Length: 299
Image 1 (cartoon, rainbow, N blue to C red):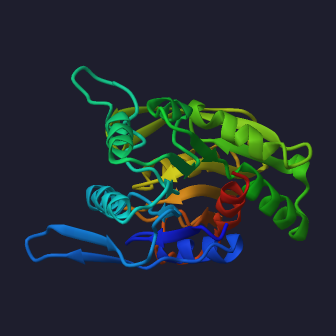
Image 2: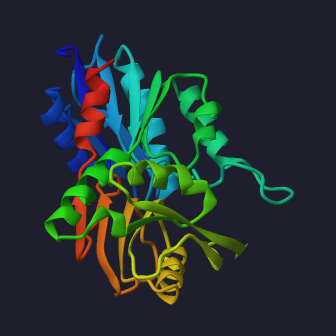
């Protein structure tokens, strides 16, 4: 793909570099400037005339600024004569605002989709979208890459190294919405079983465990989810599993936002990905660069 370039903005610079190395598509040069009054300016410094341009940017920290960088840079590429503009947003910000839960609430994930399309992207590539329905908010092609095999293969090898028999492993979904994700990881572990945690949300960023559906007594539990934000839901799940007699608890999370609370110290191993770039103590980080590179090259 000699007529293509990969660009990074503020939030995914290292991941963009890895994707470039794995795909063989060179990195383009971009500039992001933040003025003293808070305004943002982004511009393309490479020749993109007639070329396919890939923007790599997780829309996080803060979501509004990182999204606005994307909007502005898309216009810069269009003004410079780019052929097609493909947005790679490993973490899709506002994805949890995907429905009306209470009267008067907006569907912000759909607003973001409309804005991105109106700016002129031709395709979106993301990783573990919070819900499949987000794809339906777009009228352009959306590729949702899943990390089930990435986590499944890692833990199959890891448990073998530790001498943990797969029949003694329970893959745990922290809510019913993530049960399919847990089931996919479970399929990589021979004879592992699945458990689901019943919970309710009394307020935003608050959750309460009401029950654990499945046998976890004396088992090695592997919690699988897409996002950890404050850590409250995850910590509640860990506590509930130990109360139900779990032997050890491992965790696999795609998007490590970790905006607030510390994680339960009893977690045996915390495994995540580089969709969100931040310094993480005592974490195993798996890269999604190969997944994304393969998706680009398969077009």
